[in-house]
Each structure stands twice: as C-alpha cells, then as structure tokens.
Figure 1 (spheres, rainbow, N blue to C red):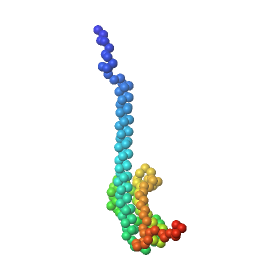
Figure 2: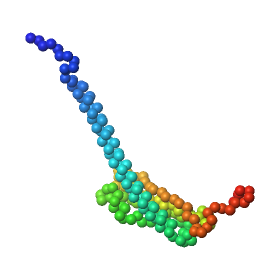
Figure 3: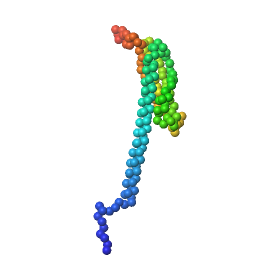
Figure 4: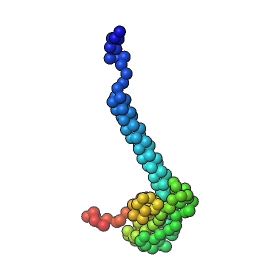
Length: 160
C-alpha cells in the first residue's frame, strides 16, 4: 500500500537548504568574530593612547614648572619614556615596542613661549616591522611670563 504524500509543513529540510543555512550561519559567526578581534585591538590602542597622554601631560607639567627665562627655544628634544609605561603596553612581555618622547620650545613673543610635547610608539614586532606606522599623542600650550600683560597694546587705530 502506498502512503499518501505528506503535507509540505511535515517534510524535512533538503540537503541544499541545510547547507545554505549552515553557510549563512558560518558567515555570521565569522563576521562577529572579526568584529570582536577588531574591537579588542581598538581597546588596546585606547589603553596605550591613555598611558601616552599621561606621560605627555607629565612632561608638559615639568616644562611648565621650569623658570620661564630658562626655557630656551629648542626643537625635537628627546626625553625618556618611563619603563613602567613600556612594561604596561599590551604584549610588552613578548613584543618589542619602540617609544619616543619629544618636546619643542619656541618663542612666540617676549612674554610667550609655545610648548609642544609628542609621545610616539609603534609595535616593531608587527608584520610591518620597522616600517610600521607610528602612533602618537601631541600636546601643546602657550606659556606666558609670570606677571606680564598677555594682550598686546593697541593704538587708537586698532593695530598693535
């Protein structure tokens, strides 16, 4: 005796339908895992950037507390990055980070000086190696001689 065909709602999935659903599921999982890896890299970069900002802020404070007359114009003067910061970099135990601290001082006027601090870093053990791009944090401020008038004197015509 022959059985009557089952209704469409009672049939099983075909091999092609199952394979396609598995393929779509696999693509979704791969996209999600890629986003997770990418977000982890961004979080690590944010941690490094935050630490670099703290070091730059510390160097800027050192320059600000220096006597105004002792701040001579200089460009690209290097300073040491604390080893504690380098040790806290992600993967610093098994990776070689290159770090560099640089500051510049320039005269803007007799009573103002421009201070710029840069912290640069890169992971030299990355696939790019020595040609890996540098990441950096820059801070700048204008320092005014204590007790000086910060605004220029203008003539009645409005020009200094």
